[in-house]
Length: 466
Image (cartoon, rainbow, N blue to C red):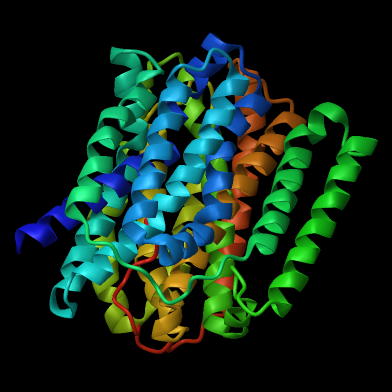
């Protein structure tokens, strides 16, 4: 490998590691944030969702900005924004400032994530591209898996602010290296669907706000009903706009393919059930059992580490038998694992009663994530691989946003109390059961994928985000 290619791989890997880590690194900090900043359940939801929501909404726009203004330039800009927002999060004197900083972090991450993939694809020759993209995907997987453990270790050894301060030296190193070591490149698709971006952003924010505040304000209160109505109108207008504009940010025509539509539907439902459950389960060990952040992160390792070992095997197997059976099996395992967790979780539950459920859920994640890229990319022409991959990533992020909001609403409606004790478990169990049911519906959606999808036309994986 030449020095230029080595630098390209190192810089893009560092950038994707930084932004992917922040998807889950905050989960083990939630009980500490509740205590130190006086955060409510709604505040904790926004701490997670502010990042994920802006990440999802601006993901496809980030790719288009890189095509128009230069991928190296926009990547460096995104890293700079993410780094500055990380410092702002670390310095946040209140939960409201922290939420705002997290939203800006998500915007910066949305500029970074898709461009790391396109820069790598542009820099490496075809015969080396698969190996480079494999390493890129592995780094993203490690970042996802390491998030809860890194967060727990940092919080216990230092303070919650350091989960954000850690990004600053990485960002300060990556920005100048990107300008010095990466080649500039542009893409053919330089259009910006600003109207679509505005409609989708406003609609998703209104929907998320209504779900998060429904329990407190009353589901039939004028404000909540008005927010739901605004969300329906805005998202409906978004779909109408995307179906008529010449260069949409979300090409609805891609969903005419049954494989593409079913795979993305399954991805939405999987993210909904899984990450909504993680939001609540990650707090259980600290809020209910009184464990430290590091101890909580260590207990989640059977769940988060399983994809690192199983995903490569599942990816190879999907080339032989197709993605459909692996996705169905993976979603069924996730649903069973979540239901198992809900069934045995009690304030005094022994870890031995949960570890099998964690491992099953993690293996199910790996069986799903590895083949879904092949299914999605096999459904589109090579020229549309970037938009297809970005669409899949954005849909998964939106599923996570809705899952956190809705399962937290179920938690509150069932009498859950985030301060801990039996009341926390009373709210957690029905919420996780709902998450398991939604993932099971995702398994049914995956059965709609044709039994023999066409061979993948591109080796590129889907964006490595949670």
